[in-house]
Amino acid sequence: MLTITITSLSGGQGKTTTALFLGRLLSRQGFPTLMLDSDPQHNLTTYLGFELEPNQPTLLEFLKKTVTPEDCIYPTSYNDNLFLIPADDQLDTVQDYLSNSGVGATLLKRRLEAVAKIFKVCIIDAPPQRSQICLTVIGAADYLVIPAEASVKGYGSLVRTLDLLGGLRDVGATNAEVLGVLPFRDRWFGNTQAQESRAAVEGMRDEVDAGLVLPSIRESERYKQAINKRATLSELGYTDLEYPFEILIEKIGKLIGSK
Ligand code: ATP
Ligand code: MG
View 1 (tube, helix red, strand yellow):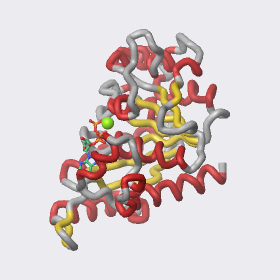
View 2: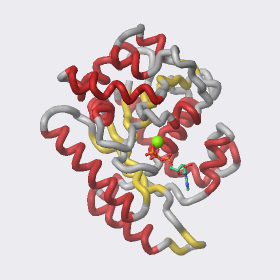
View 3: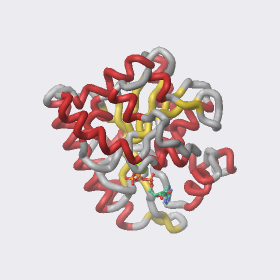
């Protein structure tokens, strides 16, 4: 199983949007795909149409190992290949458990070993804060995708995320590599890119190998429409807007093939 964490250390950087479309597209291509919602705000869980009862197992129980791993994995209505380990706001209570465990950064990686034979790929939606949960989802990753708004705030989010990754790699808490940086809400007026967007994307190209900066997610209501209608962009006829994800899926497909 190839594990990819979608992370970026600010709110509203496109993490959940990216995780959701990647999961849908990978599963539609026939890959058994596990999505994991690691944000106590649980937007991914909501977008996938789940309303959990308080007693239903989630990522909290998966991490604490209080039930069998399979009991925390739910099929989704999207298709037969897409599964979810959901979250609810109780997930916040796992922070102490992770820090007291002494192996917080590697705990999720260990837990995922139990299901690694069932899925080809695991897509993790990370929370925006630099929390214990954030450390464990980066620790579990083979690769990171870092979405970052094409703005000053987004550039800062990328820099903080790369700093954290560097620090964790330095102490052996993760082996994750950056698979791609995905500029989010890139603003264009006709054929002209907004100045702030252009400056931010150029800044991103200076921070990482320029080849790692993926084609942008444009500022557009159509992404929200697709999220709300539980569809992919191409299913709604917006094939051109799906391009950044197609490039990512191509990269991921090659990695799965070589695993
Ligand atoms: P958080 O840090 O709160 O978890 P996030 O990084 O997961 O946020 P998203 O929730 O994916 O970010 O996106 C932030 C907001 O932008 C959402 O309301 C989403 O619907 C909206 N959005 C998604 N795609 C686009 C787009 N292409 N253009 C404009 N807004 C978008
Ligand atoms: Mg989110």
